[in-house]
Length: 253
Image 1 (cartoon, helix red, strand yellow):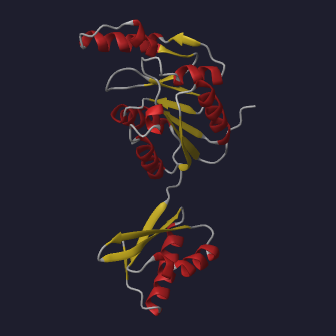
Image 2 (cartoon, rainbow, N blue to C red):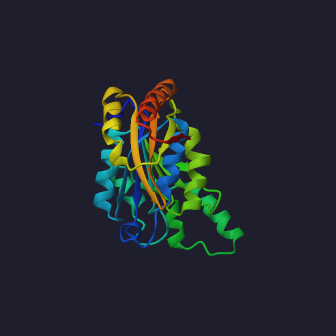
Image 3 (spheres, rainbow, N blue to C red):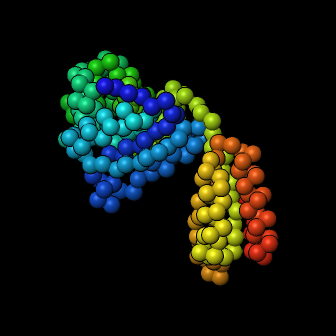
């Protein structure tokens, strides 16, 4: 059964053997995560999986049932190892068909570029039946949308164009998460007990501790995140009072 979560949440699936091997450094997850934060979508999971049909099918179906949005990047190009489109067509039992609009986009692009539109390139026009196109103004070959799954290119420049111009306008905006931070000039182990007390006291705010070591500076950045801005301000005010009492130097960003 196809079940959608009522929460405005999401998962990112990065597909590619080149990511898993360490040959290529992924940039897409960070970009999508940043955009999600700005429009109030709660990103709950990021997964990197190989170019393997059985794994892609399984993970995409699991994600589509658990999350409101599934953002997929990678594996929709013209080569033999680009199997994402086929895997998703099998996952949702939708036959791959030649999308007429995608074909026109490719024909126009390659004609204007004086490049042959061979069978390998035409492969990118075959999409799951009843899928909607995700337009690509960089290199024409489109991504696609099936149910709550948004499939984009793996190349960062192309993916970013797709997400900003074709995906994001179709997403439901939620209440944004407010973020504030405090920098303290002591190791996090010295304030761990204090942070734990505040975390237990205020369950509706995420308090993260991130140490830094840049000699001669050693300290900790404490990050507060919540949908409730007033709560963020309240907790920061209270924790600053504690730091002052304990003669801990700090600065608020």
